Length: 103
Image (tube, rainbow, N blue to C red; front, side, top):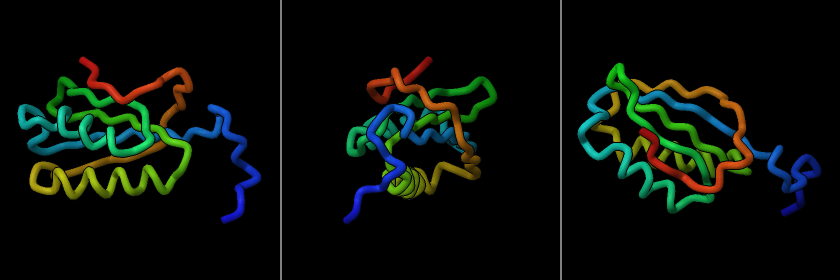
């Protein structure tokens, strides 16, 4: 495998995505299970309940394929709970060192 000349390993190389999950996603352990899933990947970010009954997930990694696999696992894990998900780019937070539940 050849090194990507565009990746220097600095924090500016992070890719950040924001997802909003709708459905039966609050009161079912969604945030806890998402945090457990994130521990299996080299990702940072947070998950939190929103006042409208949806859940916000912001996740960042240095490799798009890591994010792709993480989101695939999210959909497998929550297939029976999620009725809709919207994913878009998000600002990178280079200071974030872990994945947490936010309140």
